[in-house]
Length: 477
Ligand code: NAP
Ligand code: MG
Image (cartoon, rainbow, N blue to C red; front, side, top):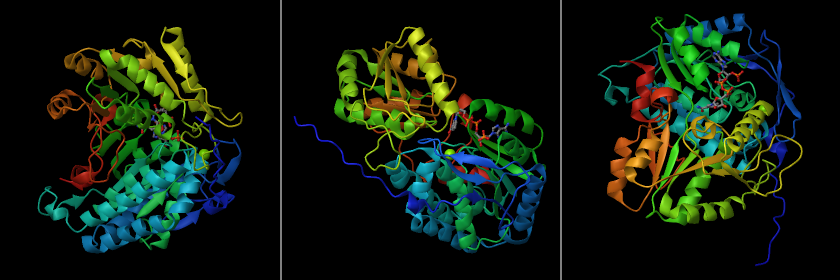
């Protein structure tokens, strides 16, 4: 077979409209914050993209008060049909500025442009569209005849889907009549601040949405502010636990969306080539920086060798490199700290005796990159089978019977998602019933839709986001 070289197909970075400085968004205006400015870098090149002002503690107080005023005087009183118009406008403006947002997201986060363009940005827009539709129908959502908003929502989001997580949090809050103070992650604040521009462009009343960049202590100040009535957090289990402790007894409503160690389970009757695509999408999508990533492959013993062989061949074709190149499948790891964490866990896998296979693909020598890696002969006690790696690393375990598959899949403190690959519909239903996971995919993986509730069991958190169920978190029911 001739081997064809790919020609570079870079998206132009000029589309990102990158500015040297970004300011925080407070009470409808872009202002300098009282904190030390941070520098956001491009993880694919390690160059500084922009300087971003951060919030001091006085800013957090100002933002919560602005959000309270906006909630009392304007947003909470506005008829749902009116709120919907603003939210629809935000959805449309995201779609209009989709290319700009996609390129900026890839620059700031390191994810491939194919993903930011085809998944992150359209799904962010879809969340606003979907929730705009609810704003005037809350009486019919099943939460009583006249469900009321809670007030100010304090929201803290991670770096893996910066714009999408912001949309995921802000859209339901606004639809239900709440106002928002949101803290984006330190390494990826830029698209949230362009979303703030869009919110300004859509002429949302000042104070309805406030976006305060900064480090963890800004997040802690937002969730701890007495004016905040609802807290929504997505991130690590450790920080989630500390937030839950700090909110105990305050009466604030809390949802936590934390880590995961999902099982992707392949039975011997599954269409293996299709399963391989699902496994690849499950763990290498977004460099594996996905809380619901299919990071544990459970494969039925009789097809394990054949599946692993197909998997290696397929993974070896993945192209690692420039996130702005449209041919790139796996982009940059978001930060040096995350890369170090992945390297450390991979070293533990080798030390504990798992068999490592790493794709022979070329990897850029500048920036933070990690070649797709598959561990075979993994046992349940190994760290790579128990801990969230949050990188492009798959751990493969085997099973013989459906009962054993369920037992192994559930042998985790997490419980965010799971995947089942089989031709048998009855087996899918039987398994889905027994798996302790908030989302169970059958013959597919990593599908996201605003209509589908998303959330965890156990240490993956509680509460649901998306769908009708997700509205409950933002209503006084
Ligand atoms: P993280 O520390 O939990 O960060 C998530 C968000 O919380 C960030 O905005 C962070 O700010 C903020 N934060 C940090 N400390 C806080 C505090 N005490 N109170 C309130 N907010 C606080 O997660 P990470 O460091 O980005 O990643 C660590 C691990 O978490 C990953 O390796 C992965 O296992 C997991 N993770 C899970 C998800 C998910 O979607 N479930 C997403 C990302 C990471 P800074 O940006 O300044 O840290
Ligand atoms: Mg960055």
